[in-house]
Image (cartoon, rainbow, N blue to C red; front, side):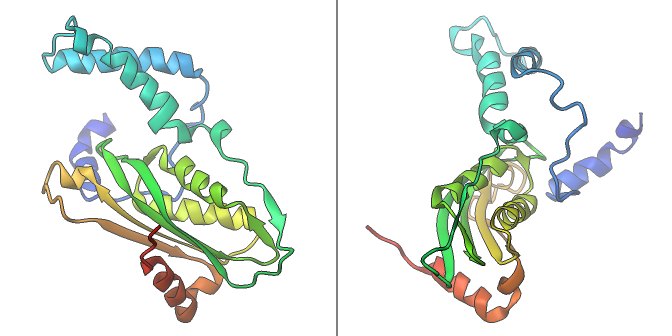
Length: 225
């Protein structure tokens, strides 16, 4: 098989955490099965993995794990693969004529590395400059959460958040910075628990150095209540 002959190349690409597509790679038949059918299949696969590892699934603590993992995959941590869960981002006219950038910082990011299926945990910071349209603040959080809930590469996640907000707001003037820890780096391999990864995507006016600097200065502010 071609896959088997290239397995070392695929391992190297994954270990270097390299993404290959701006869009999440999905098969054309990704939604042929219902969620319930997917859970039944994944449950059996998880059970097989655990049994192969030598675990005794008759133990009360382990017996329900395959079903719990399958439901978690489909309904929770990979729920963002389902386009039906894409948040509807209602927009409004900027009637108060606010003309400066709006910044939403410290948005919690919980995602999953697509190379080792281990958690990515961090913060996203988003900004946009209205061209006459504004979006509800919570919708920016929901957009981040939607694209984070899928196997991800942080660079792709950053781009997807910006592209979605650009489409919703009808402007290129959107920016996103994500600072996150990858447990595939922190808990395995090099096991560097201190390092984090920072990615950014700047569109429109944010490509201008002064505007970009203003945004970066805002997200440095120490917000306390």
